[in-house]
Length: 485
Image 1 (cartoon, rainbow, N blue to C red):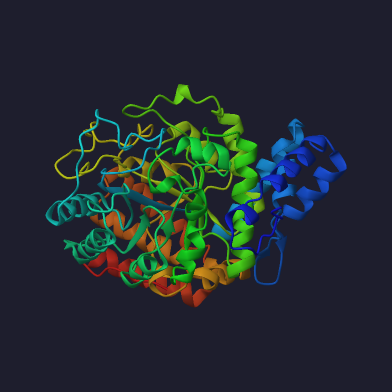
Image 2 (cartoon, rainbow, N blue to C red):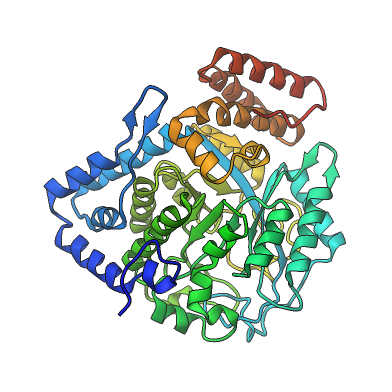
């Protein structure tokens, strides 16, 4: 009989069904245990140190108790601590990115995704390198510096060589003052050799959503194709790290299975990465199932409401305090506004989920025929940047840590020591200044420089603050770009 072992490299041992079920029973039995809940909240709370803050994080069992908690005042305390943790380690910065869909050819039979092989409603499209270049120029003209590339799984249409070629094309495009400085990759589980190729191509984070950790449901939801192999898919992050990729991103698709099961499995996966590789996930994404071609989310009976979604996000922040949390344009402006105060540190902006969805289209136009899912927040990037600043956040286009080699455990040690404020904060202000000079509307530019002036004063070290001020003046006075600490 399989035993739960977070250090095991076997999927069914580090994502152990019995352990999850025992966790859920424990959480249900203690969901109104005030003494236990208070002790868990105290453990989660950020503690002041000489250099910044320290957080212990929570185990999957402890976090599951908080997720099950029904006491209104304790839920409010969960929300309060989630925002405290986010501000302690990430400040009021919000990193911005955009997805770039390369191809919707796919051989899998995933029943929740419109790219599934049997869908005859959706036209199939794969970008040529010239089309990739056009998409990148369109994204640069919006102001983006960071992309997440997406492609269906197809051995002949989307082989690893095609993905690598696209990455090289993306990095090669230098248009006016624009550059894509970090390419994150969201493609199907692959081999150690292919992960090494992605690493050599200079990718940022490798992202792979588990969709569901419930094996029986996973097999039913992925009835055909290579993705049907639960173990191979679930063990992909270990192969990625073996291949040299030390920034990986986890996520489940909430709405496919019971959310408490998924929540426990997600945190167990994070604990596994920490136990085996010494560093947990760089990011965790929290997508919800959305309507798309040939897909009706009402067919799935595990959907979660906005309050539950907020609670999940906050509890993830308490459990993994140093991990980035991503919320995409799947969610509405109202939902994203709420979650920004519950631990989210990255958002997409001006997103198109169609293959070839950027080039040739204005901000208020978007093709729908090849969309992977409906986009709820359809605002332009400029509107998203302005919205973030109006809500007290700093929109950040920074990619410095990745380009300076501060990835994996090196990034986490910087974050945990509290030193992140001396590099990420000025880097955010300098990249925001680039956006304001090159792409912003007049109203956003005026608002932005108010934010920059205010936030420069928050940089702790005088020497760092002075250098940042000088660099921002250079950005405003010339075409010099890409300053970084």
